[in-house]
Length: 499
Image (cartoon, rainbow, N blue to C red):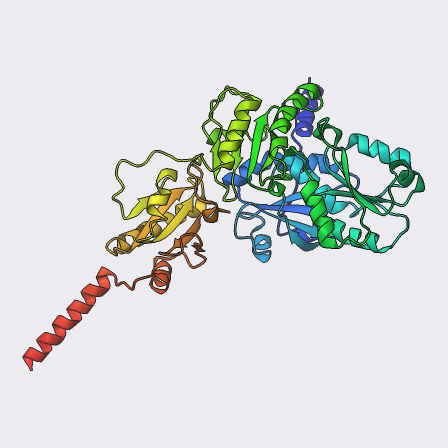
């Protein structure tokens, strides 16, 4: 009985064991000094973004633990045992991720926050910049298994001019693509190429009317043109958007979200991608990209758009300003997609704005902004606006609230300045007002609404007031200052009369 009991405990501990290494001030340096590469998350337990990242980070840690070479993932609690370490490394928002090499901070992690993207990004960081293929069999076996773009340089000899340029390109873009190279005669003969750079797409991401690979054969090309060739041809007519490559899609872009499963439903997934490709082909040569994406991976975003949850296919477009446009037709068809694409391309559609309901009254000193009122309040050209973007769960935001309210009280009678706040987890804002962490505070003065200034000053009321006095379009005085001046003048007058 007891053996079964302790066995159950041991099994439970095994099941819930984490592959994310926990670091503290006491052991941080000792545990990272011998690691060739390590990704470290600096977090706070109360942080909503950290909570959302946690399962993705855990999944990535397990997968990267078994990578060749292994890539360890670690985390530091900045509110408890890791306070000094977080301060030492300049952590000011959560989560912050950094890449360390041999115990030293190498670079900030600027990759995706989903498990697939983290794994892909860190594999590229850990492995060689470009893998050499020495036999035709090994190379073709690799091509058959690629699930993303593979760039291959095929050279007749080492260290010729094109090879040297290719190495620079591979180093510049190692975060984005997998690179390989070969000098093997049998590979060059098979593809009838020599001194060429080839973009290979995975087999599942091309239709019958698309080339499976594209080549650049001008041996005198420069680094810029090689990089442009790769960028221009990375997705073909319709690429698959993921967290790891989302930023590489050139906007404007139309994305079709549905259940993508290349393993269990390859034929069905191909069918829907080909429908999208038929429309994309008609826009070839125009400034409009097309993508497909797994609806499950983007469910949180789709939920924000308040689309019918029973719909199997969702279509959305984004323009260069990151504004979102939604296809309202509930039935997905090639004709409906083409009509939506034409209307979007011609500027006939209105963008979607994520918004809570407008407050019934908005008479408090700190004005409440929602998505639908952002333009009317924050972008009002007759007012200077200080806008706080906050999250309800954010500890720093809660600490700031009484001081920000006091600021609103002091500024309420200054007619040219508005003190405002918005729950950025429930409302959308223009991209130039994005919240990288909470709270984020922007100063949007008259005449400069398109280029707001991020407030980086102190969080005391006096700090805010000093900032407003320096930055306001029109000079102002607060009521208490005016009262003091009147009192001083009154006293001076009385003193003169007494004389």
